[in-house]
Image 1 (spheres, one colour):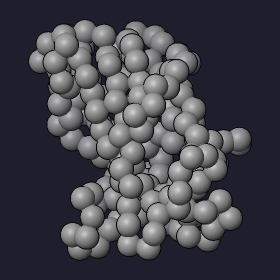
Image 2 (tube, helix red, strand yellow; image 1 turned 180 degrees about the horizontal axis):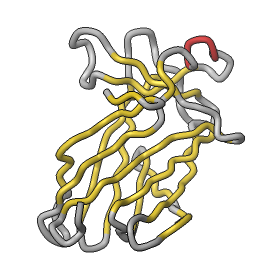
Image 3 (cartoon, rainbow, N blue to C red; image 1 turned 45 degrees about the vertical axis):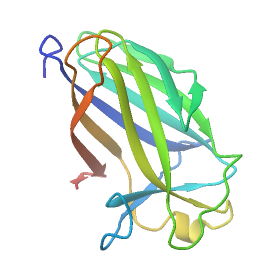
Image 4 (cartoon, one colour; image 1 turned 180 degrees about the vertical axis):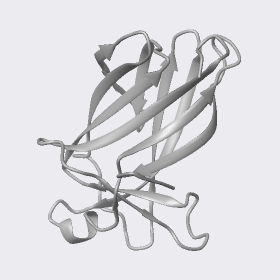
Length: 168
């Protein structure tokens, strides 16, 4: 994937802090929800989102759930770059049974444009580990992207959830 042709890949991973604990996801059956996969998060918890770009891109701004977040560049070389940002679920209520929330992630990428993606989330009480940690361990979400020109919307051509060596 070359950068000059407007194609790049964004890899998004989520870990529970402190300690980089795993986050789980599950496949949804039927068509009850907008998306087929639900990511499980706990209320009153801090999460670290790691966002990498291949080839390297410059992340100008980032919003998670409508709130401005401060990305920290962790690494950069000729083939990739990586940022981290912390997101708190302190102001979130647990989801009612059969309900899901949407967590919008919006990025402004220099020379590419605006990239938005939405994760389907089920929030659990902090002490409800048995449900929150049931399902597949989410390794990362890959977004294959195309940008037409500066300032436009970036198109997500393909979204892939990777679960510890398994693609779905």
